[in-house]
Length: 217
Image (tube, rainbow, N blue to C red; front, side):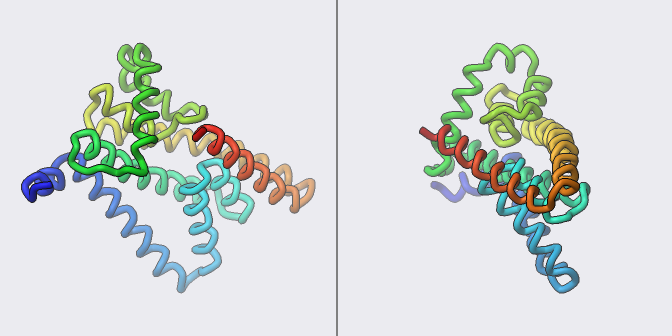
């Protein structure tokens, strides 16, 4: 890859989105490092949510946050924040890969599935555009969500920052609603028996992992 191509990619809109992701990661790292000296227990809980969201997904991460005793605001902000970090990085990687600027081999299968979804729902996306993207990110079906939605947004020709803004708003609303639902469930289980919260959390994680593994076959 030529130096001019690298420079062009860095200063492109997708390069700026990647820079946004790097900035978000840096801010999270600074926050965790500094706040650890103030409240290490809180940092451990937030870090556990971050790792759970990245590895397993949104619902187990939200459930873990509520089961750990974090507030609704803390749980929602953490999950929206980490999902937007993933969107900025993977979306940028997709654009670079799509234009043969950079190949990310371990994501190629994921990119192919995203393109399949774009083709499968072509009529829906072509007719409704931003509204279709919003609904796709918002609804809680498998292989829908902010990352796939952002990639599809590009494939249907939306502007980069329009995609990021739409995905952010849809993700914020979706995570907030999921949070309200799971928070009510955790409170109900807490009234019945505190151990039931962790049993339910383990079940949610195992179920989510099983679905993910099945989808990869």
